[in-house]
Amino acid sequence: MPYIDYYKILGISKTATSEEIKKAYRKLARKYHPDVNPNDKDAEHKFKEINEANEVLSHSENRKKYDEHGKDWKHADEINKARQQQRQYQSSGGQYASEGYGDEAYSDFFESMFGGGRTTGGGFRRETKFKGQDFNASLQLNLKDVYASHKQTLTVNGKNIRLTIPAGVENGQIIRIKGHGGEGTNGGPKGDLLIQFNILNNTAFKRDRSNLYSNVALDFYTAVLGGDIMVDTFDGKVKLKVKPGTQTDSKVKLKGKGFPVYKKEEQFGDLYITFKIEIPTNLSEKERTLFEELQKNK
Image: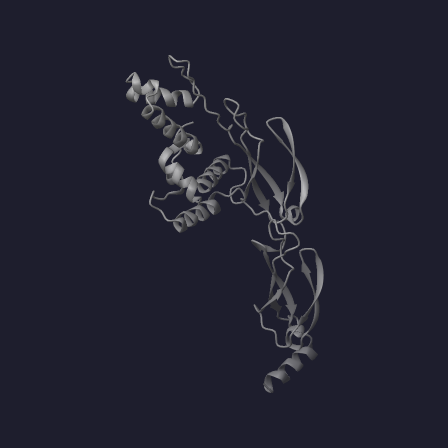
């Protein structure tokens, strides 16, 4: 596997703070998102690279391993363990040390660790089990598809995988399915399947995590006098009381009428409604006269 410079992909320095990493990721994710670049394979590839870089660098432990081991960061624990075993083996008068192999033996040791295998004169052989390669897949859904949890079958590398998609999955989110990746080495465990969700919003609602936002047209008379109106929520209509003297761009919150909270059963965000008052046009003579009277008496 060639070395991938995750810092270069996000356009940040190796000393970048977690906040700088988050800021760079959000900026690039918006720029190369499939919704913004439909049918653009280069942008799609770039978007996957950005998510991969963020997955590593935004996780402090993964970042530490990546900084130390580069492309082999996923095997950091095995490498460190192998180094410790090598030092213990040498200090105990093992064959590498007694025969004076030095650096050559150290290289051979890691050659065997990464698949070559080396048998010493005493018949000693080291083999390390490695987890298989992770597979990546993308799944495009409509916003309405993730309002409730549901099961779906994916075909990955010719295999059908039945999985439950939790309600509240976010656009660009990546979930990991254990054991559905490539075969392991030397009897190691299988890799995982990483699924990235592309959520298309073709509704009148704007989504921000578990909260929803919408604009509601309000006629001038109801805005002035108040009254009851029916408004759309994501799962149907509800009656809403409008206060007299409501101004345009004023907001109301409908608690619990937003989007499901990811992996929190029966918990929902809120729906924020912004009123847009419609000024009457094509007034009748009577209406015009009444407005003129109101104007004189204001």
